[in-house]
Image (cartoon, rainbow, N blue to C red; front, side, top):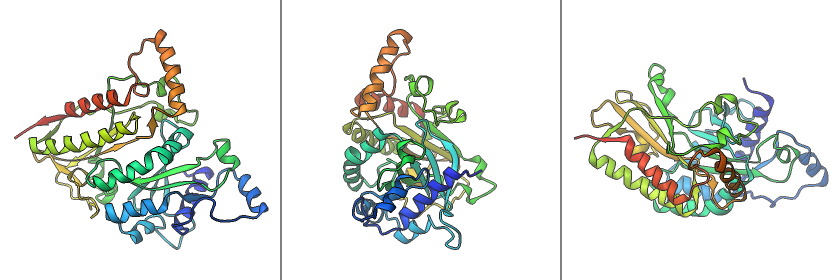
Length: 350
């Protein structure tokens, strides 16, 4: 059931996306009363698009996303009230993130409540991500289509009652519900190297994280991805390039989001998906189709929170002896373990 907080957040997101795309933080003047009322806001805060033209270039020129269809995804039914095109998903991430999706399921909205995450994304990651995406249109890094942030301080964000920043991204499961009889046959796996101990679950969980979310950290794919040597060669090459880029920006703890569904299903795949692993790679035995993207690349080793947690975890590990940890390892080592994990998922056939 949607609560007041979720409704307020969805309305803030909805209104930000309907404003002029070239609106930037600080370009408009507000009277004193407006600023005071805005500061006293707890849940429904004013959000604006950050680097709007950059993301528009990615959407239109690189990924071929139609701009009218994109905006319509967030106003699914124009006759309804604000936020009608955005629905809460009712689950929280490990960092306390709130998730929403558009009513047509094409896009997901994820909040970035941690300052270290949204500051890294805006200051260190955004421009390299833009350049890399333009040069590598077949990249499997999840496509982030917009970035929203607060226009000015508010009590709600200062007290962490409501997130100050959100990223909007593609939903690789957007066509899952097209066939009501087949949607239960789709399988999803959020995969990380299992060699690591994950202290964010066991030692320093976020107080906003639900017990249901805390009960699972990552998934285990107990089968194999059965594909041909040529398919895997192309897949491995893309993963190598993507993780090389993530290493260059000093990122760790990202995951491989794997989807598989029976090959006989014919979902309505969006026309902007030109990569086999976004559309659905057919298994060598003809039984399954696979999709894959790389997610959650917001944990940067050089940010203050990451450095502080590294010190805490290393101190704990002197006594706890839990072994290597995903958020305290180096970007190079995490990449090596990640590529080993990918190799272990595949069984070559043909």
